[in-house]
Length: 218
Image (cartoon, rainbow, N blue to C red):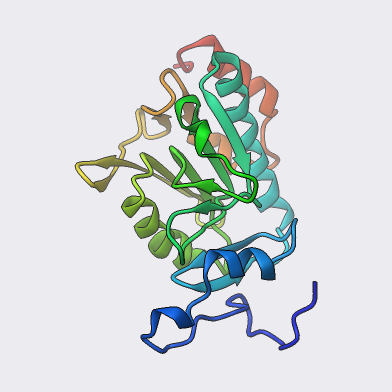
């Protein structure tokens, strides 16, 4: 759907600088303006439409999605969502994580247009134009929404951060042997961070089999 006014890069429909709350885009307006299949975030009333995925960005997100979905499905723990699914946090905030996990006991929050509230795990794969939003804006939004784990994967910088909510704030989770992350939201799930930075990426199905088998190799 073409917009009538040519937007500036990335912040396609910027929120006005006016302090009047009603001047910000609402979630209903966000849904009306953004067509199905277009990845966008509503952040503080501003609409940010993502650039087309770079191939490697897409592959990393797909890799993580497959591991989470395979593990959650095998153990009946909940649902995994790819990008294009909005999590309505407030009237003016509805991010679309690259990958998200919702525990089975929270699936009643799924609605036709969105999921009410935050996911239990949010994953963002950093791109050049999303860096500040992923590291700063979304981190604050997810923390305030009570998202229990926030994973930031930055392929360009070969960096991954795993934040866990503790007493209302995020704490950076240390990696075992400087490479193994263990989730508390998904009991028994572990991830070898080195997998995320290999080119080409390893077989997602073989990696899933290793995770399902139990402990990571020494």
